[in-house]
Length: 548
Image (tube, rainbow, N blue to C red; front, top):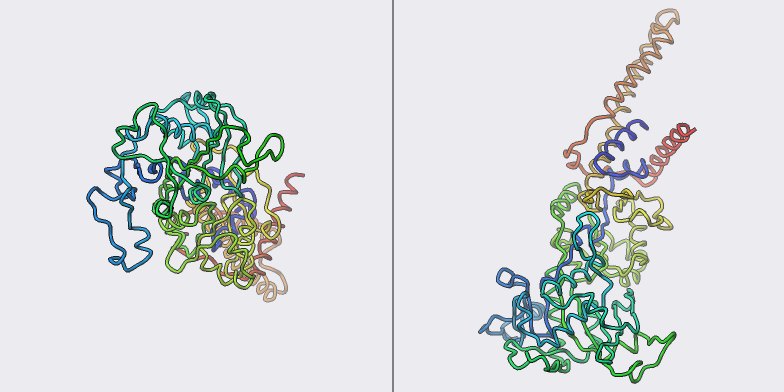
């Protein structure tokens, strides 16, 4: 059994499938639930700006002719549906478009705003960012380095030919940094501009920052007079209509798997601003600063699905394995991505961390079988740990495999220590074919079932062989004056040569995709724990003796 596991794991290593604990492979074969994250697993983690708006009304789309569905601005001359013409309130909420919205090609943005507004737009992207451009040591070419969202925004500004990020960033003197946190869901910076005035730039989730905005910039489809270099940036107050426009934009973009980022600013003449005071070390609290903001723009960044991810999810469903997504994102975005991957289906449940935490233990047990998407706020979020623990304890879901834990993180506390954790190697090949995707996890399932068979087949061969030898030896000894037909050496020869090598032949059968056609083996929790503890004891003793 030890040789079968060792031989299989060696072949898995050749396919970039790294196994940290041998016993986890055998358990992985019969896992009935796979929990996966979203970014980099379901998606490619390659962000790019594909849509958005300057202010509220100027909706820009990359390749507008081919992607007209990405704008919620009405076509020229299109009549707006009246409320009485639409019976479904949700359909009205999503489909009704504001008449003031208009669409433009993303590459033609420079023709719309004034030079001052373009400069402000560029500053809100480049100054309020930690991303930068540097030479890639492998390709020897300039590449953007940093958060995928920030690099996507920098690339957006670069493609439009705006002022270089480095020159813009160096021209502004940083007064206070507001680092991103999961609580405030925003990132900001206070700078002193060359004009000697101060400006706060904020960016992050649209639904969060727009609550702190009081105004928005105004642009026109036929600007004309606003193109003069000395023209001021026009703004107007947010009213009920414009806030409704923003709400529809959020729903519209998230239904298309776009992450919405809001870019806002606040100008003031003195530091600290009027009505605020220093909290500590010449810094003003975020609560005092994040008010009376002006919305500059909304950007929709797209992270495309991984190639083959839908087929991988379909294979899991064919295997009768449930796939659950644990996403740190907007609920609507997580639902849209899970739906396109085939994870979220009719009758499924989507819940957020606080809602899941508020359920009592019995309600959680009732919800978990239908729970398909759990939206959480941070890697340390307690509902995520509780989900894994409950999945491990439920008899019907006896094994949970996670493929999203980085190698450098310590094992999670509590019941999760007993779960198999499949970790990538420290230095993955280039490109990272080992990346934590459902495609790779599916390979673990396939190899795990191959290992199960590699352990089971030799045992099935050994039992009838040994029974036959024992019966022949006993009958011959009784029928021939208690003298065995086989001597001790012959018995050893049969046991060592015939049984061992034949069993090893069966233990080294290759893997095949047909192994994924069967459902996970059903076992009770006690039997599983006992079987795996015995396997681990055998493996540990062999490794310990070999180490000596």
